[in-house]
Length: 409
Image (cartoon, rainbow, N blue to C red; front, side, top):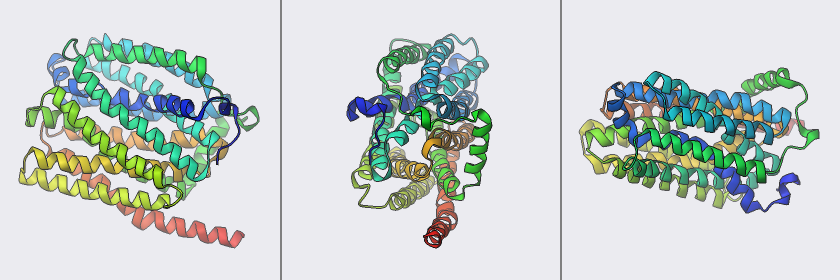
C-alpha cells in the first residue's frame, strides 16, 4: 500500500530511479576500483592484504556513516543530511585520487564510505516512508535491481578507464558522479518524511531507539542473517580480483565481464522476489536464498580444494552471488516492516551489521595472497552461520511473535 507524502507529487518511476541511483553509491564506491587492485598493489608497493584494507575502510565507513545519517534523517528529514553527505562524498573522492600513500588512501576511503552511506540508508528510509507490506518488498526488489546494475557497470567502467588512466582516474570519476547527484537531489528529490513524523528527542532518542532495536530479537535475527550473507558476498568482492587476475591470468577487462555476469544473476533473483511478492511469503524467499548461498559456498570450496579449474569456479561464484538477490530484498523488507517513523535508524543498524561483518571479512581473504582457499572457506562459513541462525533462531522467534500476537488479539 502506498502512503500519501510529498514524494507523491513526482512519478513513481522517477522516484524509484532516483532512490536506486542513491542506493547504487555503495556498490559504485566498492566495486569500480576492483579491477585496479593488482595494479594498485604494484604501484603503491604493498601486499594484497593491505590493498584490501582500503576496501575494509570503505565498508566500515559505510557502516558507521549509516549510524550517523540514519538518526539525522529521522530528526531533520531525508533531504538535508543527504545533500550535505553528497558534497562530502565528492570532496573525499577527489582527495582519494591524489592520495600519496596506501595509508592515506585507507583513511580517505573511510571518509568516502561514510559519506556514501547516506545514499544507501536514506533511500531505504524513503521507501519505508511511502510504502508498506508486499508493495514495499516490490520496491526494495526494484532498488536491488538498480543496485545490481551498478556492480555490473562499475568494474566494467573501471576496467575501461584503466586502459586510458591510472587507478587514480577511477576516483576522479566517482567525484564527478557525486557532484552530479548533489545537483540532481537538490533539484528534484522531495522530502518524504513529514514534520509531524520526525523524531524530536535528538540523538538521545536515537540511542534509545538503537537500544530497543538491539533488544528486538526478530529485527536482529533478520539483520544478522542479511549481514552474514553479505559477509560472504564481500569476501567474494575482496578476493576475486586477485584470484581471477593473478591465479587464472584473467585481464582486468575480462574480470569486469565476469563480475557483471554474476551481478546479472543477482538481478534476476531480485526480480523474481519482487515479481512474486504478495503471492509467496518473503520468508520463503529468504530460506531459498540461504539454501542457494550455502550450496554455492560448499561447491566453491570443493572446486578450490580439487583444483577443478576456472569454469567450475565461475559457476560456483555465480550461484553464490545470485542467492543474494533472494536474501537481501526479503530480509530487509521483513526487518523494516514494523519500524515506522524510525525507519532511518533501523536502516542504519541494518547497514552497520551488514558492512561491519563485510569489513571484518574482506582482509581475511588476502591472508593467502592470491590463493582462492581463504575466499572459499569464508564464504562457506558465513553462509552456514546465516542458515544456522535461520533454522535455530529466526523460526523460533517468528513462532513466538505470532503466538504473542494471537494472545493480544
